[in-house]
Image (cartoon, rainbow, N blue to C red; front, side, top):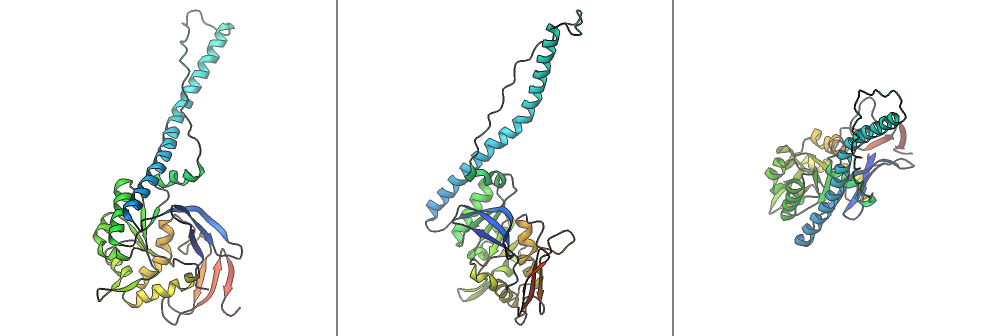
Length: 297
């Protein structure tokens, strides 16, 4: 009823993030779509825990990368060895042997690379460190945001989005230089030291990619209303709409949603007026080509 078609669900950090459609029978779109981490409370211990988690995940990912890199070379050598073995066996039987042709020296049997053991809880980290999944990091305060950027971008070079980064307006130059995305909300416009801070507007002016979150299942239907409040306080409506749709989908690798185009999922929201106007309401919602909700029904 709030006009949302695809939502994200995450457990306590660290955890995988699930994306699913809000049909009568919720359908998983992608799992995982990201990995969820947190820097809160005692930042010294939280940072140490995050580093340990990422180091362990990277070690697991690196072991598989090493195996997958060495495997093709081993398979080539194995074929060469098998061919030499077959030729040597044929020579012993006198099949087409040319006495003038010296015997082919058999190569030593190649050593197969050691295949790592599969650890289900670490499997998502392979995609994370391959750049296929982003890290979503809860970091609200200025010091937590700096730590998140230092660990995730500088130390581990991960695609990173900060969740609920209330103090991001204090670090816009840093976030822009490190190409960090911000997932703002649920409170978007605040008064800080007697001055109004419209976080999405501040990010937009610096060219920082941003999206929005409700941070609550029940509050999700009011997400567009909260974004509309930011629009009424200066945020461009087109930037706001992209933050709720295309920007979020592209960052999370959800290629079939987020924009209206041929070949993409038929997820449509019919509004009574322009998006983010106070009087505008949701009239109908279509997901995957099926009307799932109509006003008054």
